[in-house]
Amino acid sequence: MNIAFDQQSIAATMETIGKAARAASAALGRCSSDQRNAALRQTAAEIRAQTGAILVANSKDMGAAGARELSSAMLDRLALDEERIEAMACGLETVSELPDPLGQVLAAWERPNGLKIQRVSVPLGVIGIIYESRPNVTADAAGLCLKSGNAVILRGGSESFRSSQAIYRCIVAGLSAAGIDPAAVQMVPTKDREAVGYLLSSMAEYLDVVIPRGGKSLIKRVQDEARIPVIGHLEGICHVYLHESANLEMAKDIVLNAKMRRTGICGAAETLLVDRDAAERLLPVIVDALVDAGCEVRGDDEVQKLVANVVAATEEDWSTEYLDAIISIRVVDDIRQAMEHIGYYGSGHTECIVTDDIDAATRFFADVDSAILLHNASTQFADGGEFGMGAEIGIATGRIHARGPVGAEQLTSYKYIVRGSGQTRP
Image (cartoon, rainbow, N blue to C red):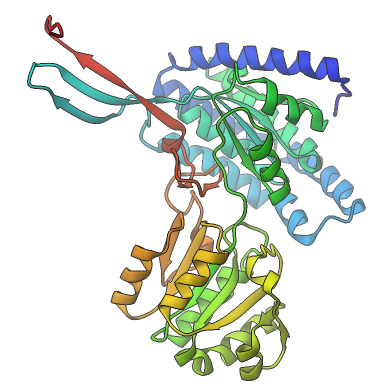
């Protein structure tokens, strides 16, 4: 149930949560890997046991979202069923089986004076995660933070409030069963946006980093208002580029999957670029497949001349993250122009080249500066689970600390351990 707060009580509540998280962070750092993994497995078991209660909570959220006439993409992100709940539980178990990211010797060397130096992985500390729609993020984020020894404060979206609370109760039960302070994972108990504002502006004493996961407006707000370091991305404007040597059947399958498998995720393709020398060979078949799948196609002048059922693309289309069954298509002169287009309009998220020319793929990998690059594979593989990380908190497109899928390993920092035998500095 959403609890009503005034501004003063929001501040008091957030301060209490912050202090508890900082204390729990210190205690969590003393927990063994086995204990943290046990909490993950216990949480997975509890989620399975509470499937019915989670579905009831989600049904209420879906009903409220339908009344608000949210987009189909938002509704898809919000919806849970038994398969998605089982995937949450499996994700936690997969994370529990990953190598411990803490205490790893990342580098070691000895100085001429005999000092032995190691760089060793440690938790970031306390993480604030603000997210929208997807209630599964509640389990994914908590699991990855727990695995990496970080305490976390979760603030889910108002549309998924009941679902997230139901999942959170399973996490608390899992932590308690493993003998870990439940304050290691806390959830902001109100939908009030003032709580987000307070977390971003007034909790630097308790939080070490904030990770936003959601739409453009949420992430921009976090990046604009945060007084704490932020790991995140603003948009997922992902491209598929069909090189002149692209195989037709492979190109069709990849484009159709990249765009239409799930249109509302950040790894969905939004723009298709096609070499001029291959456009007449590739586009008619690929556009027909997209239209048959229910996709609206927007194209430049050359695309419109080659195929029917295409709406004229505008300048705005090239920089739009549709998160819907819409794709923009442009004919380019060659790989150089394709990369220039990606560099100008892209968001640094995920790009794919479809080609049988290894040299072209190598050039694409070397010259395109995005977090994830693929050769002959769908952009929908831009996902921590698909990378073998068990789950992810999001895709980071910045260049500081983490880039690409943010899993347990990316939620660590490091410290230096120096061992001597009585050395003093001259």
